[in-house]
Amino acid sequence: MTITESPEVSRCVDGISATFDSVFGRVAAWRGAFEQRIGGARPSSAELDALVDEIVLPQFAASDNLIIGAGFVAAPGYLSDAEWHISWWLGQLNTFGVGGAAPEMRRLLAVEDPESESFRDYTALEWWRVPVQTGAQHITGPYVDYLCTDEYTLTLTAPVYDDGSLIGVVGADLYVDDIESVLLPRLYELGTPTTLVNASGRIVASTDSHRATGSLLRSDGLAATLGASAAAAATAERTVLLPGGERVVACGDTSLSLVIGPN
Image (cartoon, rainbow, N blue to C red; front, side, top):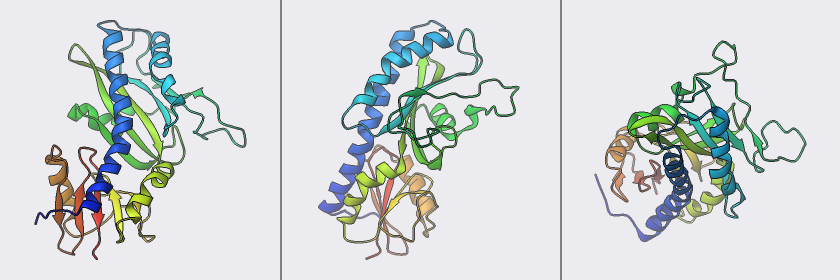
C-alpha cells in the first residue's frame, strides 16, 4: 500500500538526501576529473598518487567536511607498473592507527602483493563490486572497516571509466557516528520511533535504542519494499505501509530509507 507522506517527513527526507548528496557531489566531481585528466593514458602508481593528491586532498579542508578518508582504487591490471593499487588518504578526522597522537593527513598503507597472507582482493568487496556491476554510485555500510577506520563506516563509491572501460573506483569514507550526529536530530523531530536503513535493511541510525547501528532490521515486508524502492530509485519520495503499521519512505536516490512508527 502506497500513501502520501506528511510535510514533516518530507523535510526529514530532504535533509537526509542533502547530507549524502553533498558527499556524492564531491565524489562525482572527482570521478569527472579523473576521467578527464587520465584520457587514454595508463599511468604508473606514482602518477596516479599525484593525481589523487591534486584532485582529492583539497576537499579535506572544507569546513562542512564529514569525509574521513578518500581516494582512487585502480582496476586490476590498469596501471602500467602495478597489478593492484589503492591510492587512498586518511584525513585529520580519522583516528585509525594513531594511538593517542593527534591524527594527521596520511596515505593508507595497503598490502598490494597478492602473494602476501595479508593481501585482500578488493574487487570482492561491496564498495567495489556493486558500483562496478551497476555503473552507479553506491553506499556501503554501516560496516566495521578494518582497512581504513576500525570503526562503523559508510563508504560512498562510484565507478570511473576511460573510453568505456573501467579503470577504477573513486570514493569517500564517513564515520557512522558523525552521520548520526547530523541526522538523529532530524529523526527525533518526527516524534515517533524512526530508523534509517540502507538498501539491505541494515541500520544506519535510529531513535529506538533497541535498534543497534549495523544490525539488520527485520520487519515483515521490509526486504521486499526496499527492493522495490531500489527499482524505483528515480522517484524522489516513495512511502509504503508495512503489514505491522510501519511506514517506509525512500530517501531520494541515496538508496537509504526511513522506517517510521508504528505510531
